[in-house]
Image (cartoon, rainbow, N blue to C red; front, side, top):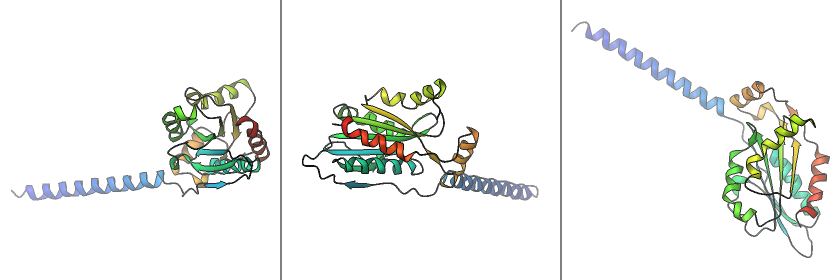
Length: 216
């Protein structure tokens, strides 16, 4: 019997140590996946054209930069007479009531973000009946060489298997480490992704201006 008391004490200490380790590990994971809050671009503008045509710009983003591009595209559509609305993909349940749609996404792990590909799959029937254009923001495969072109095509391969956009474009994006979680910063280093803001706003606006004809 005297031996049992030290054994129970040792077991309690081991259990307490394990509980503490689990708590620390859980705290580390929570910290490592946390990223600063993202300000999502939302809004609607009215083009003022005699014949109203409503366009919806939907985007998927991780840190907000794709949403900023989507907002500029919607503003250019308004300047060309569309009534344009911009929304993050998680805020859109239907494309009903719109006469044109623009979809855009950032790239993670060589493909569009999963929330956007799920949205497209769910809205496939409706999207097939509407003029559609798509844009991609990415930070790798930015060159004009064959390998870069092939990589870019791979980013939207799953999307093009579901819908048939009238126009598709790839824009250099933005990576700001201060907007990423610890794990995301490690991933950026692992794949040697460029950092900084590579977005060419003049090119983005020129493409958006061409949507007036594309989406009619």
